[in-house]
Length: 232
Ligand SMILES: Nc1ncnc2c1ncn2[C@@H]1O[C@H](COP(=O)(O)OP(=O)(O)OP(=O)(O)O)[C@@H](O)[C@H]1O
Ligand SMILES: [Mg+2]
Image 1 (tube, helix red, strand yellow):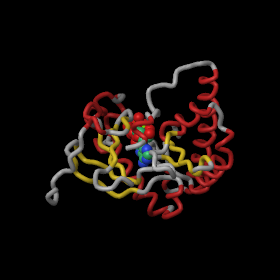
Image 2: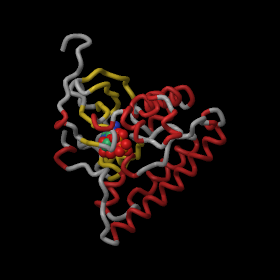
Image 3: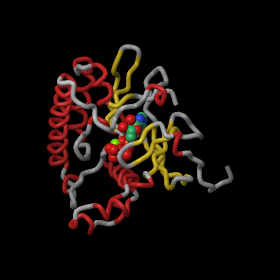
Image 4: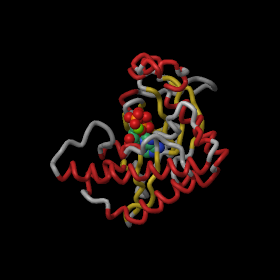
């Protein structure tokens, strides 16, 4: 690849497809992933579909990659290294054939497979007890750092496992306060209170998913990673 030429990505090779982005294993380094906006979910399109009062926001606020990069700059300044036991590392942006890509740490299990989402893990196991201390440590650390996020969704958290079971939970999407003027960025006590509420909601979401599974309900659209994709 000549310097500056976009990295060639083929849509069908994505290992995962979220509601907004396609995720690829970085062809240059399999320990990294690259996320690009889905063509049918461009920032312009999302702004057009937003409620009228949200359409006043800058276009960049509808771009998940730009939002995530901005949140990481804030986290780097306020939490530093401590945050990286809760979120993947970010390596910056890279031009790709499918538009700007955001490059970050690809979270894998110790056997090399791409880690499952918390939603996938819970659905497969039908219980949360095996997460025990890992979930508790995550909740405590998340709250203590006042980590900025929207609601913590089960398909936006991955469970990294080793041979003995779950080792860590990491949030791979949904970072940053959703507020128009996020006061919590300047008031650590408020950030911790809001982060605590996100954790309360996460516990509720876990219980609700397990109840839905028990009632033979639907898994939903997002958060399942086929075994073949986990081997990418
Ligand atoms: N760093 C990562 N390590 C491992 N898997 C990841 C990583 N980032 C994303 N994934 C996988 O890719 C899926 C989609 O990624 P992501 O949530 O970033 O997309 P999105 O389109 O922004 O999501 P949403 O639908 O929540 O808007 C995740 O549910 C997860 O399975
Ligand atoms: Mg997501």
